[in-house]
Length: 210
Image 1 (cartoon, one colour):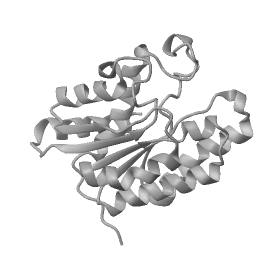
Image 2 (cartoon, one colour):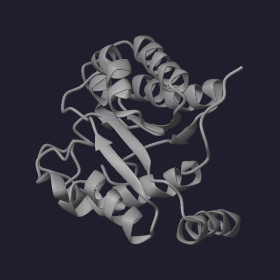
Image 3 (cartoon, helix red, strand yellow):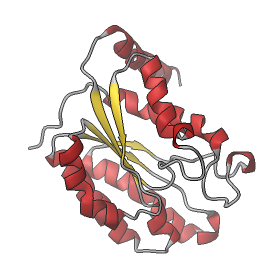
Image 4 (cartoon, helix red, strand yellow):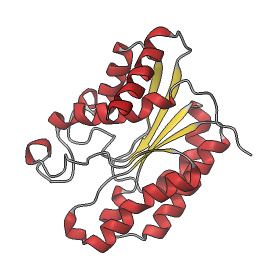
């Protein structure tokens, strides 16, 4: 824990002490990132932008998240979206709707792998963000689903936030009435979680491929 704290502190100091050109962050996600059920300026993406600005970490955040999106739909338009916005870092937060619809985990993994490759081919870095399914989907399916994110991170060498909502989905005071989407009170917690995993990626230069 002490080592982890020191690494984060070093990253913060880097942002505070070193002037750097603003980087562009592209968020490709579903309703968990699209501020579903609340004003956009209260969602975690807007709060993350505020946190980074307060720490003098210059960046522009483009939120291309769409409620209800699946990995297949997002994959189909990813290259065009990257070409339009030319991000330095892409945050991939997808898969929840694949899981909720009971779609093939293998197909989901294939789509996410193709998206990671597309991001790298455009010279950008990846933060892969996992999600958790409700327990009623059964331990076999949910275990296989959640393992995909770890497998992808290892196979493609990308940064991983294992779960956007770990420890939140089980707290009723942090969830909307549907039991699926975090409410306003949870957004700052989510933003801080993403920030922790994002800081080491900022200003690290473009991806180089063999």
